[in-house]
Length: 320
Image (cartoon, rainbow, N blue to C red):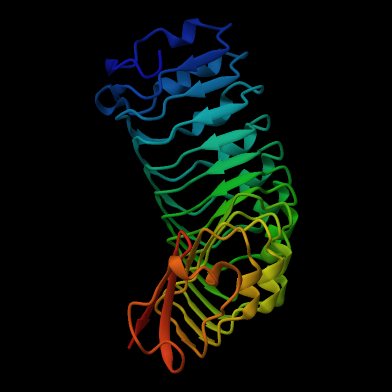
């Protein structure tokens, strides 16, 4: 029933479907029934064989009922994102121990991540993006050692990125952007060799220098560290990130010369280092070598402060 332009409310009678294995009403125009909110989820607790539940992409309102923890013990995938859900995530979510996917993104959910989420040890994908959640990341999240994707972007999470991220040895994609994280980028993140898609830490309050361990992200395709308070030079070890295609470091406080290591990164397609404090010479080899693909917009590029932005092998150097 997904993506069928269905309107109205969830029909009654869900409690009479004990053998139901899949319930998918996602991507429709379904609304809540008056003040009942998401109470229909309580009816689904009678469906003890339910494996897949998707109510995402509708106009459902209300809070997540505590009874969500009484859903099927074999429930594997739960999609409730893209609605108008508010309130906290109930602690009972920790009872759904068979979940491999939990997506609650793009609602108005508030409060902290309940520690009980750490009991979902089969979880491979956790999506909480685009909500109003706050507080630090609970240490219990480190129990989710099967995670391959985590998206906590667009919330109000605070504190340092915890060392428990070292436990995510199967992680392919991590997005913590647009939050309020501070402190340095922990080595535990930079040593996640499994990261093969994206690491996005942009638009936070991260500070300090970049560690040489950044070169251990040799399978990463996209790295976005823009809009933070990072300082110091770009480590030459970044040349070891041989799979990198997109590198964003704009709007920080990075300084010093551009490392010659950048010209060794043959796969780079987008490099944005704009609005930093770099100075010195632009490297002349590798991606910087093809003169027909170099556009020098300003004149103060060989010494002093300048900004460099390379997009699809195009270099734009902006002078002060």
